[in-house]
Image (cartoon, rainbow, N blue to C red; front, top):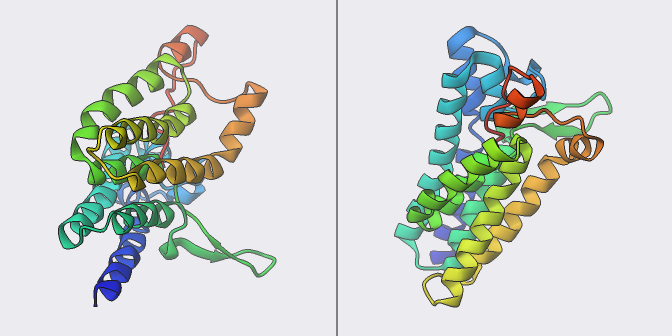
Length: 226
């Protein structure tokens, strides 16, 4: 019985994570199909580009909440840290590879679209330990504004989670599985952000924050998610 409940939680996390809130928010605001805008991702950054800062902020918030909510539910239903961890990872997988955005490529292969996973990764970490929000939010904002690349900010979310959960595990406050969550989340973010990493290496990635203003760019990239 416990195994069935655990499996249902993980499946529910994937399905909830698959809800493309960015696509829905932008469609409601201005009717645009977010999949046809710039990167084609369905997270907060692309929603910002397609419909403005409020759309980006709302999308990012909803993506955080969907991941945090299902992980909090898993923690309420089972004490198993492995289930908590896998539930959080499943939410990111759903966000990045949404079953609701499946499409057939010209070669006949099935392709699942979605976001880059930053907000979902943050939401998963918040679900595992809610006070991490007070650490993630200012540090991620500092990276976003100071370093000047939204993709770097996105990658930093899981790195911050790794450090926080490693310290808590060393002190006996959190299970070691939560550290593994941060590692797996970072892997998923790196996979999703491969195009951005390529542009970073070439020096063509879009800047934002004070870097953008210094370079004379007027359009910030926003929060990469996603």
